[in-house]
Image (cartoon, rainbow, N blue to C red; front, top):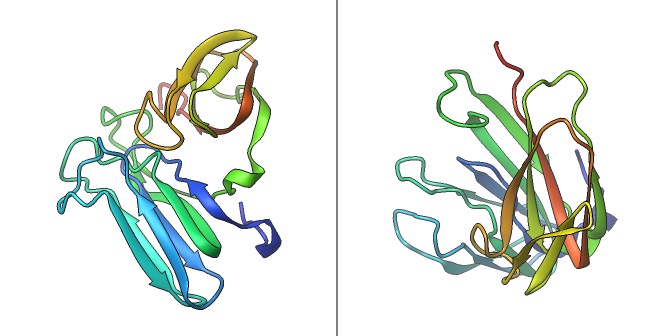
Length: 196
């Protein structure tokens, strides 16, 4: 998916799956961008909060460290004083886990938090026989997330680590309604059909 410039924003929560990479693209000169990586994400230099100054057309790439466990950058909060674009991806991802020998390249442009909604519907892919994986990201502190009108989880933080600013949900061939009082983002990760 590509997002046109008037739909971009200045605040994002980074969604990904496993070995993640993010790419931030500046749309204006002298953009000050702040990046907050979740506290449970391991990195070589252990940097959690940092800022970069970028000019129009500059690209900043941040890559999860595949050499350590828990290098998923999911929940990273990115804010800027000017409009930016954000791309999420992975060069070689194994869905749902490392038991699969094959891997795929995935990439997606991300919508800003101002475009998040309160109601989402998840629908399984027709040709898939395995479960569908979803990641739900909180749009505010203490967000209550309901699945089919049942309180599923309360997320205490806006952005941040698993079970605090987001959680993963697996659904087996069912359509679901996900709702919240504030806003949320829903990411659908399709698992491969078994056997290959």
